[in-house]
Length: 386
Image (tube, rainbow, N blue to C red; front, side):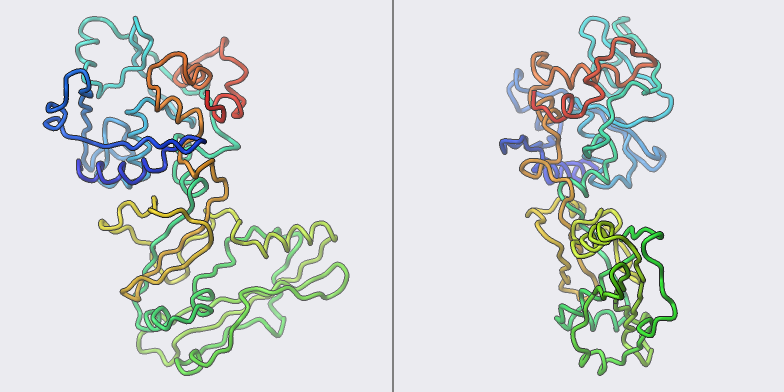
């Protein structure tokens, strides 16, 4: 687990950036390595339990199955950032003199408690500052990573037909194979599926027919009249049975859209610019399985930034890497919002990240009559660098 955490945070902390591009690189060291440092530069050791019994876990108790996104979220707690989502029950300990939150895995926790230096505060989290408009890894962490730095999926298929398509190098086939129209939120009052349209259907293709298939549009729009249009989508589905007579099937769907000029323009721009669609709707294609491999543990935090949609075939010709660019990128493609970065950088310095720090005070309380109004304004408590 130590090596897993170390590898993860070294990859994800490359995205701990300020708006000006400053980076906080986090390194995990063992207690033995810490003892070699000068005493005035020696960090307190953090005790983290791990096992299969911890379920969703927390900052002091890791489930063995934690992925790198979850580990990053929990480590940010150990570095001083608090949750930004609502949850039920729970509580926390406050140091009577300093007012600091003391977690149960803090090296001085037992000493503080035995000396009567801690107050336990029951919490319902109703007073937390929640990022609604701006993604936060301290809130909806999976969604935040996808929206802030981009989405990466590793998908695999098993059949020889799939392997043949992936190894062919035909980009049109690859696009058709990995495109999924299900991700579009086409409102039912604008577009209706047209089952009887002559274009609708499935064309089974032998390997020879697939090889000679001319390039196909993934989607196209046809005018019917001034207020009606056809929205035609196509995708390729590999045959999963290796002994099939056919290698793939080309599937075509038609939707008839009736709308005003303004709503149609919005709809079709939405379709034409599908790379900017809400990327959490895009995942592995049908008949592919999402995989998380030990050797690719940090794949959600790629070395290079994701600037556009891409589908990369891996050397085994049985798996692909799908990447989607961020829809809500922060300055310099940071995983942290500005105030979070400031708090992380300056730690317990009370004169920095003052609004963020003030709002965090109400993260674990049952009532908060003195809570400032700016704690409901993300542009102040979260987006200001402070």
